[in-house]
Image 1 (tube, rainbow, N blue to C red):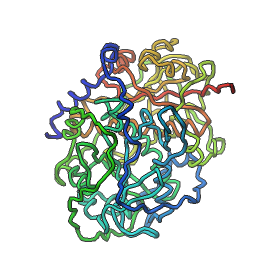
Image 2: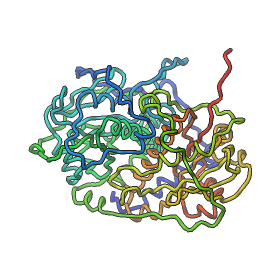
Image 3: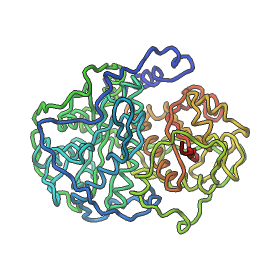
Image 4: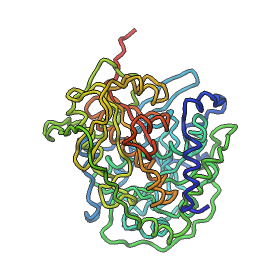
Length: 514
C-alpha cells in the first residue's frame, strides 16, 4: 500500500474514534488469562548487565527538557554508563505494585494502561564498555542482549537515506511497538497509542540525553523493511516506530555495509492466545516507506503551521525567571513521576505554574519531520477549571505570542467529564489540555506517515508536560476522549481539526492513611 494513498489514514482514524455509542456497543471484555507478558524475553541469549550505579547528571529537569545539546558539537560519544542512564530513565522499572493477578511494574515514562508496549533496541559501534552490535534492552534485569555482533551503523544510516544525525551517531536507539501487549485492552486503537506511548518515552530519552551532554534527535524517515529486518522482527507482532541517534562523531567513518541475515531468534510468547486486529497492520503498512529515495523525498517536505489571528480576549503567559524555578534534577523528577489517579477537585494551580509548563514543554522537538526547527503540528486547546489568575473557560494556546486566547468563558467541569470518556479525572483536574491537529493538511503534505508523526509529536509534547508538571510537584495524567465531541466543543475555532491526545493537570488528592 502506498504512503500517498491517504484514504488509509482517514479510514483508520475514523473507524477508531470513540463516541458515546461506540463504547456502549463494544462487547470487548478483558481476558485475564491472556494478559500479555510485560517483557520481551530471548530465552537462549545471555544478558549483558548494564551498570546500575550510574552517576546522576545533576541537571535540572526543566533545563533538560528545553535545552537540547546542539548537534554541531564535536565528538560527543556515549559510554556504557551514559547508555545505561538513557535506557533506564526512558524505559526502566521505577516502581512496582502487587495486585490480585501478580505484580505491576511501572516504568519511567507514562503508558496507556501501564502495558508498556514500546521496546528499545540499540545499534552501536564500539563504545567504551560495549562492543559493536545490535542489542535489545530488557528493563526486567537492566541488561542488553546481543542480537547481531558487529558494526551495523552503515545499514541503519543507509535505511535513513544517510540522515546526518544517524550517519554521525556513535549509537542509535530504535523504538518498536508490540501490537498485542496494548491491543489486549485497547484493540485497534492501539496504533494511536503507539504514538502517545512512544512519545512520552521519547520526552524522557531526549531530556536525559541532553542532561548527559549528548545530542539526540527523533528520526521518523527510514525504510521500514530494512530496520525491521535488522532487528529480526516478526512484523505481524512488532514493528519499528522511530530512531533516536545518540551523540555525534565529528567525522562520519561508517564501516562497510553488512549483510543482515534472517535470524529467527526465539522469544517467549506474550500469551497463549493473541488476537490480531487487521486495521492496525493495514495502517502501519500504509504509512511505511519502501526505499531510500522515498525516504529522502518524504523528509524533504517542509511545512509551517501558523495560527490564525486572535479574535478574543488574550492572556499573556509569563513564567518566573530561571533562578526561581524548581531545581529538582531530571532523574529525581522521572523517579517521582506517575500518572495521577485522582485529582483534588478543590485545589488550584497558579498561572505561573501553567506558564512554566507551556514555556518549557513547547519550545520545539528535535525531529526530522519538523521543519523549520521549532515547528509544531499539534495545536493546544485548554479547558481551565481552577488556575489562579485565569478565569474558567475554554482557551487556545498561541505559541508564537505565548498567549492564551479565551474562546468562551464558563464553568465546564461537566463538559470535561463527558469529553474525557466520562471519567472523573478531567472534571477534577485544574486544567485539561487537548491536542488537536489539521489532519487533512498533514496527510496531504506527509502522506500516511504524517499520521504517525502527529501522534508521536503529541505524545512527546505530552511527555514534556508530564515532566514540567512533576518538576513543580503537580500531577498529570493522559486520557482518551470522544473524538468528534471534542471538536464540537471547541468549534467554530477548531472546525476541520481532529482530536489527537488529552492530558489533565492538577494536584493529586492525598489520601488519608486508613
